[in-house]
Picture 1 (cartoon, rainbow, N blue to C red):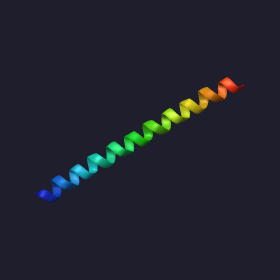
Picture 2: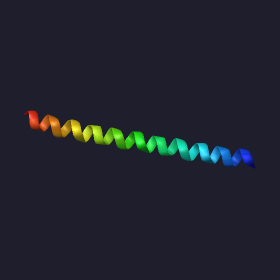
Picture 3: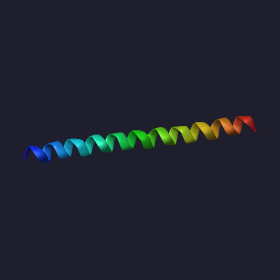
Length: 40
C-alpha cells in the first residue's frame, strides 16, 4: 500500500514540474515575440 502512495506522490510531483516547465516555456515564447516586435 505504501508503494502506491509513494508512486502517486512521485507522479503528482512530476506532473507539477512538467506544468511549470510548460508555463515557463510559454512565457519565454511570449517574451521573445514581444521583444522581437519592438525591435522591428
